[in-house]
Amino acid sequence: MTAHDDETLRTLANRMAEHDITRILIVSRDEFPRLEGLLTLRQLLHARRVDLHEEQHAERHLTLRPRRKRSLVVASGTGAWPAAPRPSEEEGELEPVSVT
Image (cartoon, rainbow, N blue to C red; front, side):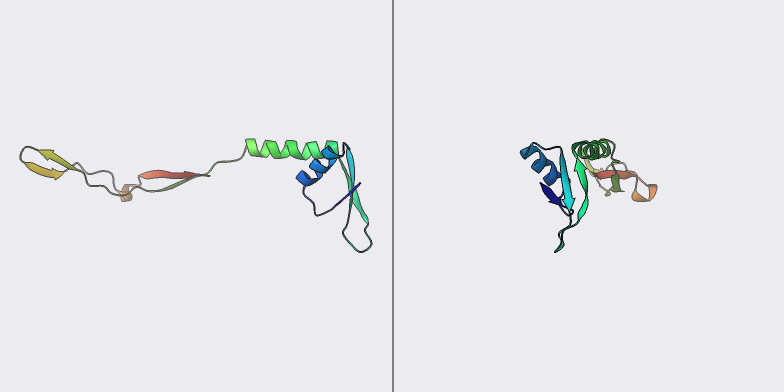
């Protein structure tokens, strides 16, 4: 059984499992195919282990943007007036908008 050098590891892992094999020859798609390498189950599992480690330790980035100014009106018995001012954008107050 052979595979081509442009196939994904997922595809190769599925093929290896389907045919119950632990090694697969990798060949080029040229007119006259040539041997590019050999992929073993051990190498496949190592690649997956590295991928899992990177997923578990991926950095998370928090994007911040300045808060919008809000003017609150507080009702009283004699009328309405603006509430105490909130910190402004110039003071650098930020709110989280997304985590990627």
